[in-house]
Length: 210
Image (cartoon, rainbow, N blue to C red):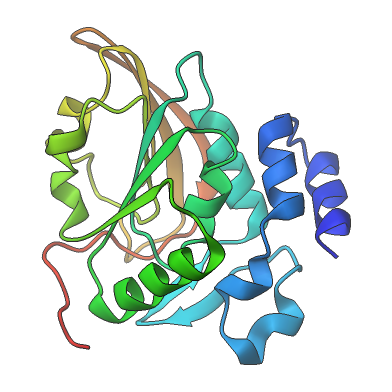
């Protein structure tokens, strides 16, 4: 079924081969609740608990494709969620760093990565708006929640040599938002506005309820 989904995404304009390979090979049904696995290979978002969703495959592929550049060594993801986006990114980046603020989701996804053998994915339970400075700079940063403005910490942690940041920007209470792509060249940040999207809000702090 993933092959059919891959062909659908090609028809919608996704052309990056690493991303298409990821969509075809990453088992999305293992990243959604068991009662929703029959829907895993439809091009739609699905609830995963904690008030969060797994994004529709087109959005995952689109954001992954936008992150691709000359340097694809290290990527930071803000909002691990189900872990599907991080797994897709392993096909494009050597090392994936991902932060989740909801304990329920974090504990589940750490076990999932271990079970599936994703040793190149590094996880942290924290407030993602502060990034992960110990491992910066990052060649790319992806934010999978909508923010009213871009956290300065994430801009600071982008590689000054063409680092790329993709983030949904807009009022989470008044959707849709717009994807924004920022490319850093030393102290200059070039911003491009892209697709209309719908994401859960980027919230501060952590939710430590088990």
